[in-house]
Structures are given as structure tokens and as C-alpha cells.
Image 1 (cartoon, rainbow, N blue to C red):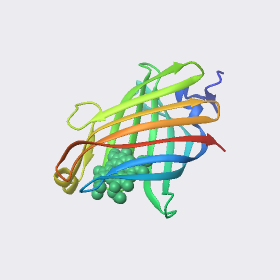
Image 2: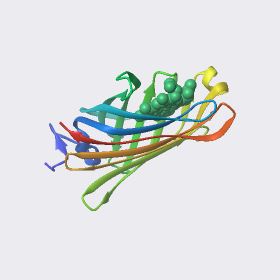
Image 3: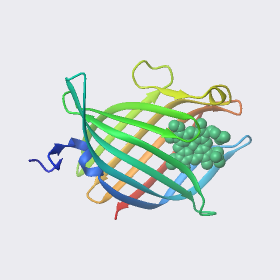
Image 4: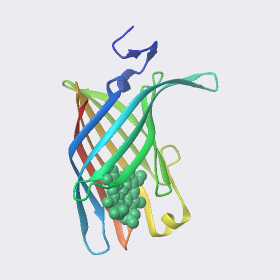
Length: 188
Ligand code: HEM
């Protein structure tokens, strides 16, 4: 049994995520018609070890399920809610994030895990139109607020987690608008 094994399943680079994390130094940069919106935020992300699955009797993926709830500091209202999975394929050492948000957009991002000193780093990306790691969204978004790219980097060292992500949007006539989010969290 390695230190990444939980109840008999090896979660590899995802094992370090399991737990309830809170952070209150988040910063969101989001689009407005005339300018950027800067939103300081706090959040809770819950990651749960969710077992493994086998695809076509040959690929086994370990599964970490998560729920992210983000609140605006200015009014304590939840303004972003995201659910998804992190998956690890030990055969290819591929890391996958699947996520959905309640704007009628969902995405499948792929990448890898690495180490940077004491940190475990997970990096994934997706882009609309890519044949492997891609983005799906409802017709209104396609025409008015299309998500064309996504990059996410998360690093964990002990009970500290940091992430930064860029979601690329076509909105309000802006091309490749960089909608960014970053935060540092502690395991509770
Ligand atoms: C911590 C993560 C995130 C936060 C806090 C956040 C927050 C926001 C905010 C404040 C806006 C401006 C519109 C509004 O006030 O509702 C916005 C717009 C948008 N976000 Fe995010 N977002 C996050 C992640 C994402 C992700 C991962 C995606 C896509 C996969 C996404 C897709 C969009 C889209 C398509 C819009 C344009 C809709 C509009 O502005 O009317 N966001 N987001």
C-alpha cells in the first residue's frame, strides 16, 4: 500500500486532494460590457475519494469527485458553483478534469501531474474544437458568451492548495477575453 492508496484504491497524484478546503483570498476577473469586474471571493472545495471505474475492460481510472462553492466577499452571495471529477489513468499517467457549471457549459480537460519541490502539481487544459480535450455549451452561449479555452493549474503541499485558472471567452465583442480565477486554500 502506498501513501496514495485510500481504501485499497491508488489515487496517485489525486490522493493529496481528498478533504474539505477553504480559502478566502480568491480573486476573480470577469467580463463586463465596458470593463473588467474584479471580485474578491472566498470558497469551499470538497474533494471525495470516489473509487475507480473500468472502461472497455482495459482502462481503469481512479476518481475524485468535487464540489466548489464560491461566494463574493462584497455581499456573501454564492456567485459560482461547480461540480466535477478529477480522474487519473495510471497506465498513461494522464490526469483529467471534467467539470460543469450552471451556465450550460461543461468541459473535459486533460493533462498531467508533476512535482515541484514539495508540491504536487496538476495541470490540465481544454479548447473548443479540440478532438480530445474540449468544451460543450448551449446555443445561447455559443453565440453570445462562448468559452473557447480553459487552463487550470493546481498545486498541493501538505494542507495548502493553490490554483489559478484562465477561461477564455468571446463576449461583448471582446476576442479571447481572459476570465481568471485564483485562490489559496487550507485543508480543514
Ligand atoms: C472560481 C471560478 C469562477 C468564478 C468565481 C466565476 C465568476 C464569474 C463572474 C462574476 C462572471 C461575470 C458575470 C456574472 O456576474 O455572473 C462570470 C462570467 C462567465 N463565466 Fe465565470 N467564473 C468562474 C469560473 C468559470 C469557468 C470554469 C467557466 C467555464 C467553464 C466560466 C464561464 C463563464 C462564462 C461563459 C461567463 C460569461 C457570462 C456572463 O458574463 O454573462 N466561469 N464568471
